[in-house]
Length: 371
Ligand SMILES: [Zn+2]
View 1: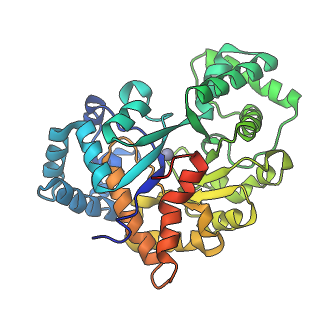
View 2: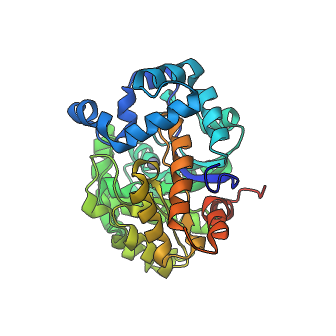
View 3: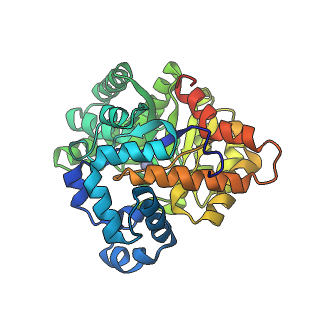
């Protein structure tokens, strides 16, 4: 039995799988890379260590040959719901924290669908920038914008949203500071016009930082954690602006000190910076989604070792960033447990630390009931 398999895990960061038709419309290979260039996907991804390892492990799970064709056929025969259930059971996954801001909701299972198909708890995360885009389309005046943004947050909370998430790293970078009201107002005027013209990808730091400040206040008031994308991601990310050390303007502001902040993706390759921040600020946590399951075994173990270097084990969370296909859930559970075991090799507290990282920290943070 793989190490720590007996400890159920809570996946701190996942996205819904596509529904069958939408899943089939994308090349299978594209799920194993953050890149979107055809040449990269077709020519190089088949040779990536992540894809090769995934094929072997999925073939074992699905009891088929370890070729892309055989694995794909076995998956398609099951369909997304049954495959999801199998991945969850084989991965001993107890609960998910789901960002349904991607894929587009009309192409993917809902949070409720996921909970039902998987037979486990699923907490929804609201993606702030999606709400900002819809509110800025409706409101060109800052007072109306603020009221509608807060109303949207409150409605989501009442409907069961357990955390907020921000992707400012993708849009304008992590060097957050609270803008003057006049500055935010000027930002909104431009964003409103652009949204009206059909461009919903808001990148204006003046408005996004203003909205994030409001969202942080709201989260603090209601005890909701705020997840922040840090480190690597899709190609539209400027990696230099995704270093979590840039968050100093947020972390040093006493106004936000009681908001639990979760740095996503191990901030890779800035994992040591993330560990440092989690060690220095009581409200900062870090997960290792996306790095898990993408990075090869030794590199992932190194990253987890780095996270647990300065940050106490009460600050580090398991995650997979499963997206588009449920297979990632299983690959994450497997790679994540193996890498955690390698990182903790020889540590007499290994079992206690593993339970904290895999389950307890997320259960406390998002309010999942003990099992
Ligand atoms: Zn994600």
